[in-house]
Length: 303
Length: 310
Image (cartoon, rainbow over all chains, first blue to last red; front, side, top):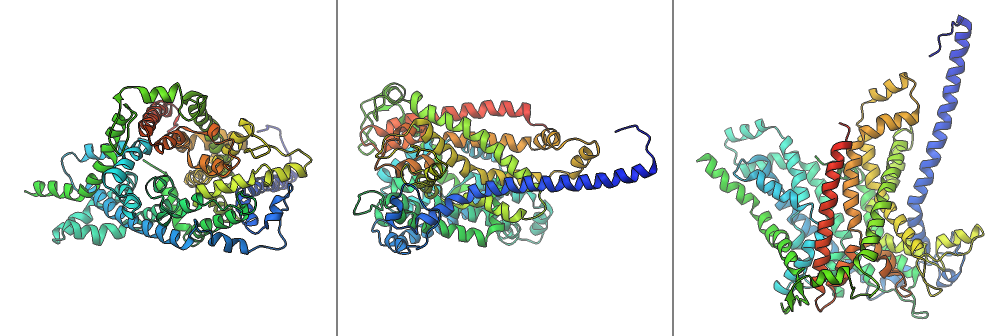
């Protein structure tokens, strides 16, 4: 940088000063970075904390204009109240959600694996056209389909308030077919030909070789699909709004949690129910963190 | 022989998917278009009064929900505001957080996990938490405002009165950004970790400042991800619905703000639930949404061709 002539001694001094300066700069940089990240992390966590805190407060505490940021006497009875709210039948909601989630995941996996295999391995006329047609549907807002599907399911097929209505219309996911096709395509052709020479049929090859190799993608699809059922709201709200058919999110949103005395929403009971809806997914996340995060980042990077 | 066999086999493998897609994707697409033009259409009896633009007229000119509300001044305005404000903020914030996460030596995994938490929570459930946090009378935010000596702010409306539009919009936007961050951070972070260290070493040797390195190396190298997120988040923002109903339905007993916060999809589902002719109006709304999304996609694919750097 500078063309100044420097003596060996001053060079030595310079180097030491530079190392020192470098170190101080690095410490300052880290302080700034960590403070920024901790502040942002704090904003991410606050809603969880507040949900939990409100779920443990008394109704009287919630009346105060200035809320305390802690509570000395946690009211676990709020959870009991939430669970005994007739509209929020937690056991039933859990059962419905898991039942619908598992069955629609199985259905999704079967159709996705078969379709992805056809697109990735079998050469047939119209393959490209068909695939492009599938992909094009991804750009169309789901509301276009929902409106007619609502009629098809409720008026034509008479599936209103059944599990079938919650499962069947969402079995096919073009995005998952695309994702798995990409994975299948990476499996070398040689394996396929070798299997052919050995007399292995297509289906056996799919089961014994392709599915095990593509397991990470299949696990990703399973996790995303199950999470989808846990979070789905709009469709179940349209076609299965009977109390005993609701999924967990509809159960939470649909229950009033009214305070019998004031007639307003009892926030503590409502937040206790919200904790009950949020925690299972968080627990699953803690146990399957690696799978979920790598799965989501993998599925996010398209093309 | 071989070819012929693989032909029908391929269709056999595709059969379940194709059958389901014909019933639940392709047929609905056509049918919803037709439905949009059926006036006073009753889904269950199949009767309608005529074919025409009546549903679009209701959408654009005179609303049946509220005579003062129409597509332009409520639904499109709210939706476009959500898209234009929340998308750039969430992308910029996610990028900065990801770069910061990528340059710290310790606790990266812990912080990364925390930042991912909103992704594994229920949009409706946490929306309800935001409604409680921003409650006009007993919320966390107004508690903090008062601790710092301010007067309580009307965020969502309560029996004390209606909240100003801007305040309610702010709550909605904060929630949407909060909800949108984790996926974007994760995507940026995994892309950052894939960037060749040589670029940064070269910049360091040249004595390039950090800010310049960020602007000249990191951002261009991440431009494919930025464009991808721009397109998908913009489209996502135009379909915003769950956040609106979770926050504003919760305040419904005092319910002043919900209708003015309505989005396009809100209009679609609100109409769908109305018995007489609602479905036609919902379909008209969906067709308009479809057209808007096609336009956005077309514009953005043109723009991305110009701005993606490699």
